[in-house]
Amino acid sequence: MEVGEAKLQSVGGDMRRLATLRVGALSALMLGAVTLSASTSASASVPGPGLALQEWHAPRIPGPTPTTRPGALAVIREWSSKNWSGYAVTGTAFTQVTGTWRVPQVQVPRKRHYRKNTFSSSWVGIDGFGNGSLIQAGTEQDWVNGKPFYQAWWEVLPAPETPISPMPIRPGDEMTVSITGGLPDWTITVTDVTTSQSSTTLHRYSGPETSAEWIQEAPTIGRHVATLAADATVTFDGGTLNGANPGLIDTDAGAMYKGRHTISSPSVPDSDRDGFAVAYGALAPSAPPS
Image (cartoon, rainbow, N blue to C red; front, top):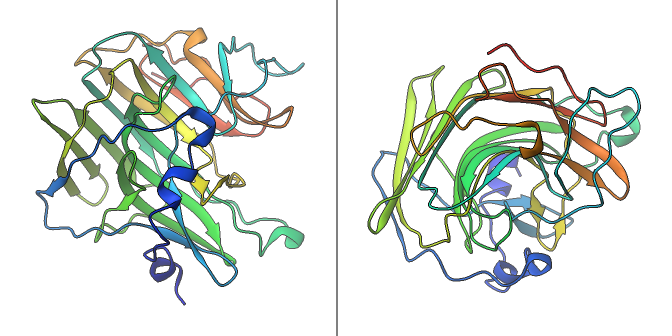
């Protein structure tokens, strides 16, 4: 079976509650979605041993007390996570967020890990930092059944991700995501700037609007946080929050941990404080140019 076909399978509705037990029960936020673009969508799943499991982009799962590894660039990490790394701004009444990045290339695993499935996603969203609500959209960069796999998606919890199809994406494509609140419908626009393809959808959403994020994630597959794919460094830039520069600061940054080991690290903000870089591993990358 091709990877793209396998990711369009689904398991039962009970899976919808299992992915975020560690951060509390999710409120039923999504009443429906109206697709405005010419694309068609379906719930995504990924292949397992004889079983397809749905892919989720869960709220932040808190990790251990953040630390700065000797030799790493000085990044004051205010928070940590078992599934997120990047930047999160907290406050009130966040109703608009945008971000731009280039799709990172999945690194070919070492021979002994060649057949191991690994997953990563780059996304922009609102909520999910300290609650079970989340509206978001982005790209995924996976290594599945010995092959790289890339696609764009959107998601409004408690539903799993919905692939944006047809919108083929490739490593190096410049992606822009915009999420804008409305009464009552929210608008998600995902654009592949490189290929001039765009998809816009409307969604009912009623989360608390208390955080906004630019995140590199190890997604949740079935019941478990997936093994993070070894991607090239991702640079987020051109971020806005409520229509203005988000003014990112060092303490908005958080790293991803597996056990006590840092597996994904953000840089300090760029000079105009609307972007940053995220690197696979414990060593924080240099801040990108503004």
